[in-house]
Length: 377
Image 1 (spheres, rainbow, N blue to C red):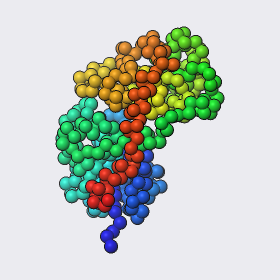
Image 2: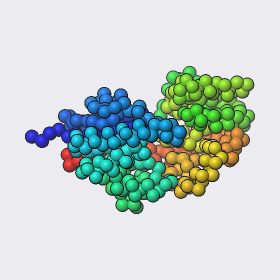
Image 3: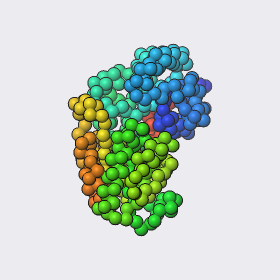
Image 4: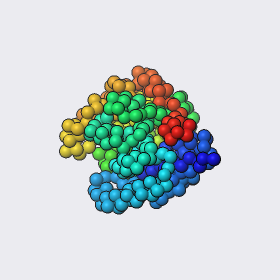
């Protein structure tokens, strides 16, 4: 009898641990005796992953932080490559973390191990020449979005669009009344969610801007109640300081961002992955973002995409307003949000079409592609 399938996976942060867990569960449905090795978090370890070292050692964000840990990261990648080559897995899956995983995938592929990269970096938007390295490092790219798959097709990289796990998890129709009841909100008053980001720097740039926009919005539409989910206790403290002296009917939530989206009528939101969640909850939105002026000038030259927000990238048109940098003023944001509170049907119809396109049982689709490549389907 042949040995059980051996799958190597490396995830570098919590979102990758969630994706890896779902993928492992789907592989075990077909191969209950599958062996899993590599690096992952608590969810992947609970599914049977033998992690060579704690995933937190890879979870580094920011240029200065990466430089401070560079030698450790390079050493761990060399060590991991040696151990995985010796273990001879049937297939290796690098989950996101492209700066770490693509170099590892290249070494493993040159050693004869089949390699998959799960979650495309934003190569379609900037630094497009990275696709040459991806083509050399990966036997297969798994993408969450269809426009990414189209990009790889055009650059002769084997690719499979598998859909997004959030589209599978979030229902087609969210129960607004139940969410309001859970949050102790009135059923018959307009509610707007403010989501200025989950990182300290984002909240520093957007928090006061969003609160000032809320004050102007309330002048345009009296009776509005605001919700603001706080990603961490630190973000809550940061926002409480910003609220001092502002008279707003606003509820701060500890987490519970999905409940806030289900409960609200419209969203003022920072560009990022939260816009996908708002889309899947079918809540009309205005997207805003600010970065440091020098960063903005650099990115404006580098970024090739006509849009910055996922809803517009997925719709391939300007479906939601994007107010960026100097265009993001309190008055402009309030004027953009106001008509969406009870008139965002064009957006929500577009969101519904996108949700249906992304709902593909992503973990099972990814497992099918991985097992086919490993010749174990």
